[in-house]
Amino acid sequence: MINIFKSLKEIDKLMAKHNDYRDNCLNLIASENYINPVIRKYLDSDLVGRYGCYEGLEGEEREYTGNKYIKEIETKTQNLVKDIFKAKYCDLRPIGGHIAGVATVLALTDPDDLIMEVVLENWGHGLIEPMADTVEHFDRVFNVEAIPYKKNQTIDTKRFIKEIEEKSPKLIILGSSGMLFPEAVEEIAEAAKKVGAYLIHDSSHISGLIAGGVFPNPLEQGADAVFCSTHKSFPGPQGGIILSNSKDIMLKVNEVMPSLVTSHHINRLPALAAAILEMKKYGEKYGKQIIKNSKSLAKNLDKKGFKVLAKEEGFTESHLVLMDVSEFGGSYKTARKLEKSGILTSDDFGGPDREIRIGTAEITRRGLKEKDMNQVADFFERVLINQEDRQSVVGDLKAYLKKFDKNLYCIKK
Image (cartoon, rainbow, N blue to C red):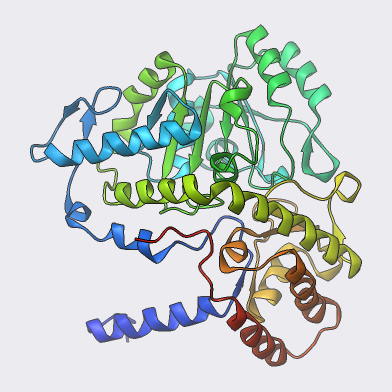
């Protein structure tokens, strides 16, 4: 029998199961976040079935009639985005960070131009490398090389600058999904400028920290453009943004965007605007607490005997921790074992299957502080080191999480 929904009640029942399940999980997935219910409600409007297609740098010419107020909603949201990210121009049409990155790359390169990016092995987002490897058309167009990395998943800046000077790439993509520390953007931007390369930054994971003013803003450090998500450390609805202080770059982006995204899901714009207002009010406190929680969790995991990366450098200055779990069977097996006990992390998908990524954004929104990180580390110890009965851990975790049903750093009506 085909497994399909047969009624609205069935949909409601399954959604209720999902909500209950996720409420009782310790969500440490660095690419997810808790969205304020007040903000979620803004996704439910007449906009959900409307088109906002446009031409022009910021939507001057609309392709559909009926955009009288849609245009105003979009313009005011654009202005909020530009204000919080300190950018002169932005494009809100990408429906995710990945599409935002692809649009930027297509806008700024020609076939066979050398592109240097953080590859999957180093927790890169896999923007260009996987496309060139798996899609023959892209393999004929893209010429991509890996940015050199050293231990603790950090860029080997000295070696990279030398490679920039020697290879003269057309485009450099900094940023990763495993970024523990700020990168040497200013130094790399200077080297890129000397060879005439564009430097763009994938800030998908750190966009919330940037908006909160607790992590360096690549645009202020010399990046030509930034693309990012709005649903990782930034607690907004899923979507993507392209930012730049260069009108020329944004005009190029504007030319390619309609071929990638026409209907750009404008129902998310009011929710995005509300999330920015929330970040304006709470972003700094929220961001600082995320970093405190990350550092405390890393220290407590280290005390339990886990191999946490970058101990010598203080473990992390971002919303995430990386931990080598080779001794437990690799990242894939480890993440699935933790999942069975209600602990959600990310395995090293596409990489060497060595490290898991542990994020603190959602648990920070839930109300956990530095003092609670020892208990979080204890759950890891019980599952991975002590090999305790799964049901015992699940029950204790569920009881523990009931203490943290707060919606911290959330704007109210």
